[in-house]
Length: 319
Ligand code: PPE
Image 1 (tube, helix red, strand yellow):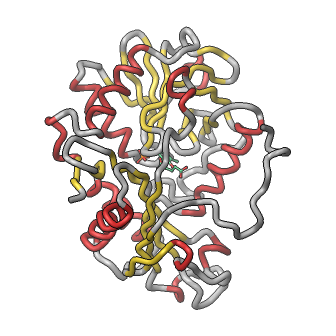
Image 2 (tube, helix red, strand yellow):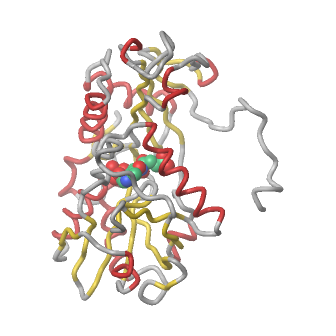
């Protein structure tokens, strides 16, 4: 169905199903987790967030790399000078409580902190301390099952990834995601699954919500941190691939280098490990999901789903 013929929800109609939400310290039904239209973050993008997944494992649901995500959440808060009214340990407990109370076996978890509705005007600080919530919902594959099986089709966005002296790209700030949303809409409207963003010099930066890897001559290359988010999945995949025997090199790459790659894939909490089959209408390798990519994906899924005892320390069991 094209976007024109899809029935549109009325403004304010709830489509998301997140069950019970931890809202400033209280568990409340989704319908009650509401904010004012004068919320500073709604006007100026002054929010910070995390994206975390919990997976079904043989020992019950487990959160993947909870400590690292909570640490990044508080680092983002520091960048934005948010006073956090809760400790990292309280946020960890809130996350586990949300999963438990909603009875999820696996889910995507979204902690969010934002500048509230005390005053408007661009200076956010009168709105401290920040408000905080943790919601979770069931979220399947990020770019669809077909992208996982056959590889995603990407186009290079006409929107560049913002430079480091424009926006804090290492922090997960709500406002940063206007850049991602513009790129993602452009890709989707052009019939692609996802956008590749270049930095202002024209080198490969990242996807709208994923870090980029490619294989060439048996070596696994990963795009250097540069202006990109320091992805936790990226870090996990580098560790796993090295253990699997791959030589992993961090590089600054150009888009034509990707056209010449044997394989390419994207990684992120939501996207997990997603093969890329086409970039800018050119097949990557054979134009299918790469063989090494799928091995790395399988290794990643084994770890997150608790089938690899070596990486138990990356899992926090819910009960
Ligand atoms: N870059 C960007 C810009 C980004 O948003 C993400 C996560 C990554 C890289 C990968 O980071 P990590 O999840 O730590 O491996 N994108 C999140 C948002 C997805 C969304 O649509 O919302 C995510 O994957 O949770």
